[in-house]
Amino acid sequence: MAIALEEARLAFDEGEVPIGAVVVCDGEVVARAHNRRETDADPSAHAEFAAMVAASQALERWRLTGCTVYVTLEPCLMCAGLMVNSRIDRCVYGAPDPKGGALGTLYDVSHDPRLNHEFEVTAGVCADECAELLRTFFRARRAARKAARASACPPAEAEPTP
Image (cartoon, rainbow, N blue to C red):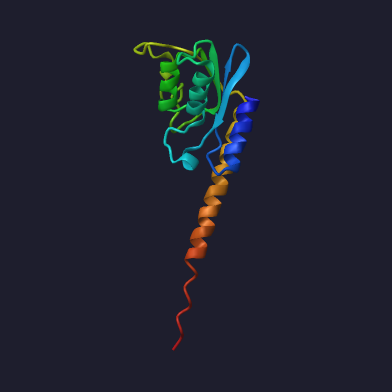
């Protein structure tokens, strides 16, 4: 998770939502990535999605059996779906995502018997650190928007008195 947090900090520095991911296979890091949706103008450029694609390329196979994905935020439906389709063994995530989490918070794609693959999930690893990085990012983003609005709308001049 430490490497995933390093990736999340890189995303933060690039102005991206600070989420990082790592894919480990047989005890070795085979891929790492961070969010790049804004940079790449790509709605699929989530950290774990990019890391799984890179892992498939590095391992030269689409099945990621034997792999664990570490990610700083609970995966969304798209990324959890890719975990099912790529046949990962396990996902370890940091902070839960109350607005989009698909590994137990809103949905549980990892253990849905209607799907063709199930995988283990370990939640809450370094959760406080992962969540604080996200809070810091969004707090700064809101402050910047507020400052931009304030500078775009100068205060109204006082009405002249008769």
